[in-house]
Length: 193
Image (cartoon, rainbow, N blue to C red):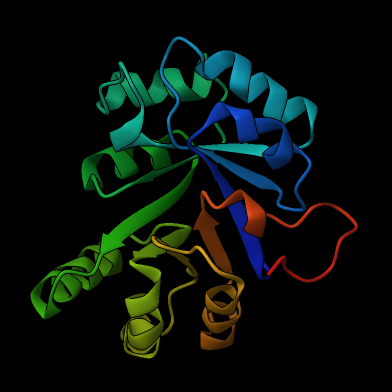
């Protein structure tokens, strides 16, 4: 997974799907998809040259077991998954999917547990939420994961361009956001304010 100050559109409302397809990002996160509309959404992503990511805990009608993840790869043609479910991520890695481990910063204990999980089964990327707090913890997390080839993504409550700039300045290589005003269109530089 190659991210370079990439804003990944998280499509929660389908009225913004076309805007996501026109964005600069090579990735689209289908946050509110279900097994009934997933195949057509992924087909549209691929036709537009985008890689389709799904959030396993938010994918309607889906069970994140080995068979389910295998079906995502072989039938639905998903490119990658985001999850806090370690077993599901292991299945996804075996299938050759991109894996993004979602870390929700609740307290120092949850952070320590997440770091331990990542060290034993490194994903392609780590999405850290909420973004504002993730900026304060990235240096500590990076130090603990030194030597691991992992990209860092911030997400959660990214609503304004000042926070986008703060996140990238902190050292994150990507952002997930459903705020369509922050999705940069192809050929457009800078952020809407």
